[in-house]
Length: 75
Image 1: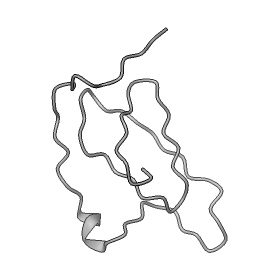
Image 2: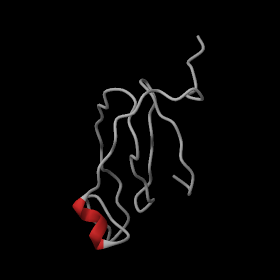
Image 3: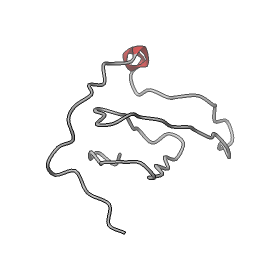
């Protein structure tokens, strides 16, 4: 998001506004999620958007071991 990679882990909420590019590039544990689409701007459309139509075909997302710099939860 915002041109940078970010870690997300169990309990995190990732909020992405309509039209903001985003992706999942690696997973380190079972990934479960849900999405809600609401409040579309006038003329907006529901569904996942892609900058390049070729991206709509998807891509592999490798499962990898947890990296050493993965942030740990405190508290």
